[in-house]
Length: 75
Image (cartoon, rainbow, N blue to C red; front, side):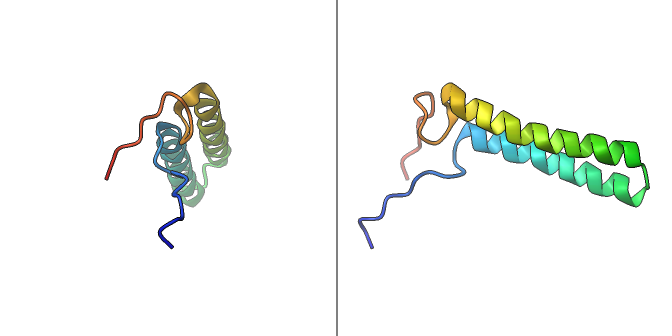
C-alpha cells in the first residue's frame, strides 16, 4: 500500500479556481430557481460551465496538478 502515488487531484490552483467558480454558479442558480428568475438560472448555468472551462484552461497553461508552474507543498 505504501507504493501508491497520490496524483495530486484537487490540490492545484486550476482545481481550486474551477471548483470555486462552479460552486458560486450552482449556489446562485439554486437561489434563482427558488425565486423563479429563469433568465438568471440559465446565466448561472453558463457561469458553472465557464468554471469548468477555466479549470481546463488553467491546467493547460501549466497550473494543473502535473503542470510546470505548480509546486506541491510537502506534508
